[in-house]
Length: 446
Ligand code: BGC
Image (cartoon, rainbow, N blue to C red):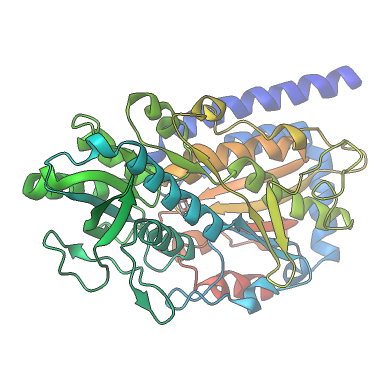
């Protein structure tokens, strides 16, 4: 019996690695794809248990009372950033999992400034006395994107105040320094003052409405470089997807340091070829937390189990990798800068975090089924880093997860595929727009 279980588990693991490679290869076409291969493999392995579980869930727990985790896009007002506490308190088992946006933003800004300071002798490519940078903005209504824009402007002295905070608006082009949403900054290095100018910034949204759009960023750097290329000394991006697109299209060949965010595999590898650096938002910790809070709620145990408090398998997270804000019902992973000095430690972004890599016993943590969506199947970070991690953890936590890939543009493309919530024991949701939590909770409340 034991042998059989082991074989089935191995089969599931093999199925998983094939799925992970496959989804990596087809990200650009996957607008409406449901990743079912893994689910199928696991379902076969645990057919009876899953069926029993589902039946039990149907009769005992109403959809509105099932565990729910929001992740990556925090329910919030996309204009003001104010958290949507109704969504975050949907039921007593509702949480958000993301990362500490302000801590990460500060790290990114500091990483760019440190680089400039260290390379001050060579950084000003045209010798005009102005250190010019361009900035790719992900989504002007997304708190994480806003924080990163502010972090960079703050560290480089280019931010201006708007309603008590640094203005995070895109400026278009500003080659003469006359834009009002930013100002020329001053960096004093070795006793000398240098001017820093944000030459251009733009929200990278494609014509269909998808944000954080890598292809749009690749086009933008083409336009910028052909009109004022020799003024660009540094390229900064709200994420690696856009950063790598600009690096490959232009900055690599022109030796212009480019900085991103996420520590995706391709970006970390590119550090060896001149990519300036990136930030790990500890996706390995976030993916674990996303599924772990559901597991704990389904098991009816203290929510801290396997998080701040070790579980019986030995899984536990230390305080240096996450914080929990009880009032916000939110877990935030902490960020780490990845540069030429330490990138060798970050070469596999899909590897499970060792302190939480222990398999849970299926006898005490029976299989449960989870509906989970990725808002945009073509998003570099979510498809190449986050989802493969989730797929590693779902096995360890005995969760049969159905992965739904959205088109990144319309909520209905995803909600249409939540037609039968009664089939699932728990839900993990990644919204297209952070204002839209009710599109999901209304389906669960019916
Ligand atoms: C990531 C971006 C990604 C976005 C999607 C952010 O946390 O850094 O790369 O595009 O999430 O919501």
